Image (cartoon, rainbow, N blue to C red; front, side, top):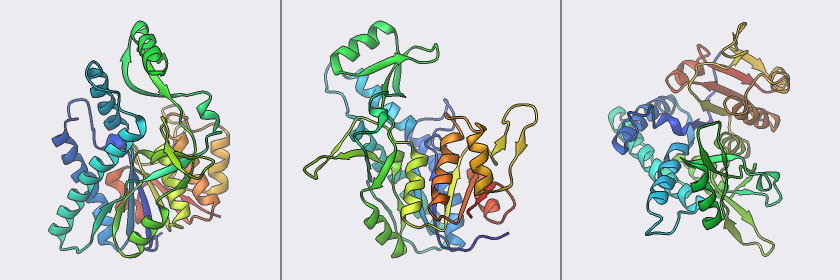
Length: 317
């Protein structure tokens, strides 16, 4: 069971750079980036053209926390600006890590990060009911004060305190798609759609503007893989394989499933919204649109998964 070489979109989780609460400094993140990109370099050395996407949840959280601590002196940081900030910073980490790997292996490749805007619809229901918690925890009084001062939406989060919540709309268009495609076709390794992309809407006059929202990075990565007509879409996560009845009696690891099978499993509620659900939904959308192969696995098992020795293969019709 071997995958043919071609173009692959590889989604790396933002938590891949923050392995635990004791290792979250910038030097720690550089070290984690080096490890994550070594697995990507393995794919590139094997002949794949790779586009890397990534999450940015912890990193945006740090920016917003700094903004909160400095609010007595400075204005708050808008969400779209924070997203762009992390795209540049994480892209820099990945670029440096990949270049160092290429130097070690004698690979001659260019690596470039594209600060990527992703269009969402202003009519998306998510804007009516914001649901994505961001930033630090607060007590109720502080939350209400900041909501009044900055126009935030806040709510209690699982008994741990109050947090700001923002919309999480579905992505509909990667604005820089043509640039990403051109760079990829020229042989560059591209880092794009960081954090799900910078959320923008298109106004009636055709201009775009950023909005206070967070796009799910798996959905954005799936959209990019679909529109690039990628041969392979990989989502790296914390587990080696997808499971049915995860963490419960009767847990069953999935090695290879067809698109109709995974559709049925998803419809039956096997995958939680806060964990595997968005990953499976993104895979379904990609394969529904003509994608060839999706793989979900942990970063260290990417190469073994490509050889059919690990991971969960989801095969299109």
